[in-house]
Length: 345
Image 1 (cartoon, rainbow, N blue to C red):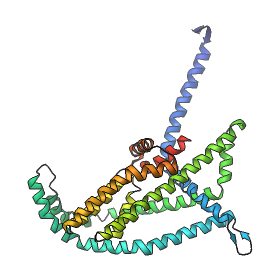
Image 2: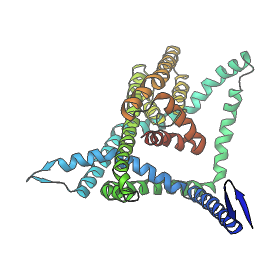
Image 3: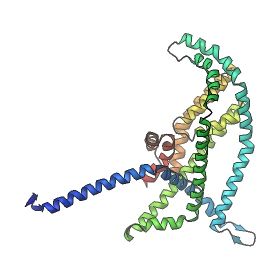
Image 4: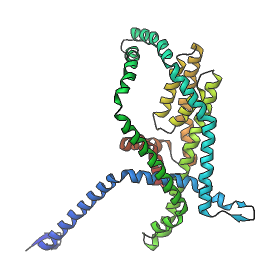
């Protein structure tokens, strides 16, 4: 006995076989989705490592071409070690030149924070009286001392914070190790991936992988360029305005540039909060300065740098950011642009 299907006939055994095949495919698809969800953290680490490796690969090749005394050249492993050493020295240099003054400024800011809050309270009370629809920020300031004192009651959470810090440190070390081996064995990894495809497609797949690496490296350089393009002018502008903590606020602005959508606004909010304790002309100058920065950054800097370095349109960049933030939060927004750029290839 059979079931008719179009012009042909399907036996009951064939129907059962096809049903089992479909169910098996559905179960396999579900298992693959479950597996991806379970290893999302590892996949993110691999993606970050791949982006770093793509950005550092040109520097490794440059070191390999550089002749040392005696006419010898660096091997690839030595070139990678040398690059890591140079980057570590640059990190220490930045630490000594910028971060140490910033830490000192942070200490002074924390010491002066009670005075700042005292000066802000009458201003916020008057503002709330004139505009009752605004939140009672003065009441929030009054509750800050008790909120700070309550932090001492959360001693057991210190272990949780320590574990999170160690987890973050482990992730950083893992990324550095992954990046090292990707730089060292990048050609072998690429050959292994290309070998998974039919011979007729391998040339095209190899070209696509090269373009993806170029996109990843371009995005990394674009992010660093954007951070510097914001941090340096902000530091200089706040210094010229006579603001305290210009190094600290400049670093906050540069780091904020790495946080999609909300980072620049948070940096501006911190600077304006500090400016509230200064003279009126300084507060006005800081507000005008950040209005300019917050308009130049998304409308001129980001589209121009991303389009020239990464080759993505502003609309696609914004759509990728929103999608990434929706899926994985801030980290998703940070990684969304390079992934979207790779999918463009």
